[in-house]
Length: 341
Ligand SMILES: [Zn+2]
Image 1: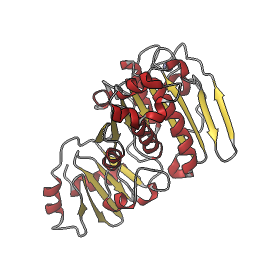
Image 2: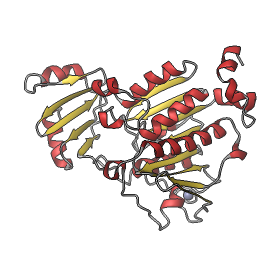
Image 3: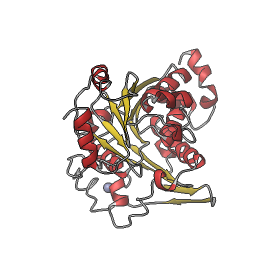
Image 4: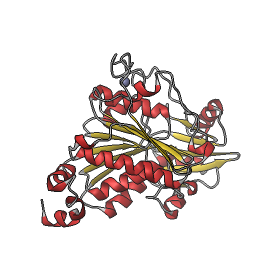
């Protein structure tokens, strides 16, 4: 290892669980993060500082002031500029550790692009905020035999589990066999404390380091949950479902697109339109919109404007988020009227 890298990671190399060999493997590893919100920013920060060789960050959203309480890679300037989260995270992380190849993808993970975006990596990290995306990750991970780490937090409570396809239970074993849990709560309906995000992200990042440094014997092997408000912690060994749709029958229904992705953004008064997968020339669109709409703002990644009571944010990949409605029909008609059909 180069002396400068040895010096940079010296405190981690001193840790007996890793050593120089573990650090070398970590430097040679590649991970992909789906969703760069609260848990995602915290995990990305830990893994980039730890010296993971390559990190791809996939996120569909942009930075808003309400994110800053818990999304630790972003600041007020990012929110003012409405930077895409993936781009803002990449900029910050490059400044933190230039030895890591950080790559941002401003994109929504869908059945169409999931295999392409996630294949070729040693590990998939869950930083998403909804179960549609997690089941899609689970399908790809099981199909391509890539380990992934499930992580979620709402209110003061969170949970995480490491999934080794073919060895451990998968997300479908856990959640499609009866007990549904309170999957309807989201951080947009019941809120979330920054502190629980930090705990869950730290558990996820330490499992990631074990996997990427090939120290599998150290994985905790349980569904871990904790509540930072009550101080309750739980670690439960889960069993595989012998009839599991995904990891036994290899029926990848989310990847096959049979399960419909949700258009509405969880708990927010917004609808995302993403059936128009085509590149948009934002400069041309801006020039056209400015003839009829006032206050069009844009950066190189997205364009925003208001048509009261709605606010539209359009990305260069053709997606749009329409704030002010939960009705996909209203959102589609606004899209057709202002962006094109
Ligand atoms: Zn399974």
